[in-house]
Length: 254
Image (cartoon, helix red, strand yellow):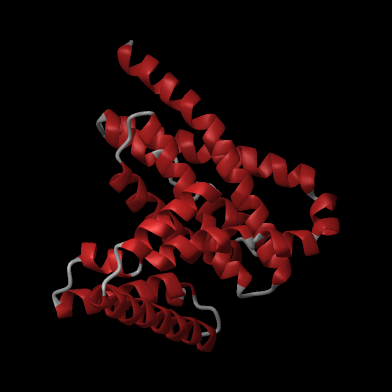
């Protein structure tokens, strides 16, 4: 994650490079992105929280269609909405607010939650490695797939430091988040698990920021447990990833 000095340096560089055309493009694409997301949230609520109507999925699909139909290159779009990307950093920090509000309840379940996150993080990495090795995936791609259940900054920085490719990491993280946010409610419903805390923690563990954002829409309690599970999963992944890569290289060398 970017530190304060890096954030300020990026902001100064971004402002220095602005032209009137760039300002107009920033306002248009940022405004359109926000509007589409708000409409996607409204559709999600009207659907009663249907798994296939999560805002990241529907809103993302609409924006992809707009870019394709308008012939806009993704690089141009990404540059125009760079300010929104920068705003993700303080937005993530604000997740501490619901966690603080639910501190007493969080303390009451810290042990089972910690065990669940450790088991879930290890299972996510081990299952990915096992399937990838069976399919003969190359080392760079495999490393890029391992941190898929962590948040984007942790996943990208961790994988790249060990030889992974940032683009592949980002694709896997987004896909995991969207699929996790869709499947967690369905699977828990099939298992007849109705506990809000279990659902929220599972979403944060499996679907990181996307799952947490989904739980935030259901209330502060769900948001707090999802945010804590997401944070703990990121920490566990950062610790387990180098160990997993070392074991993988030992196995492939042998």
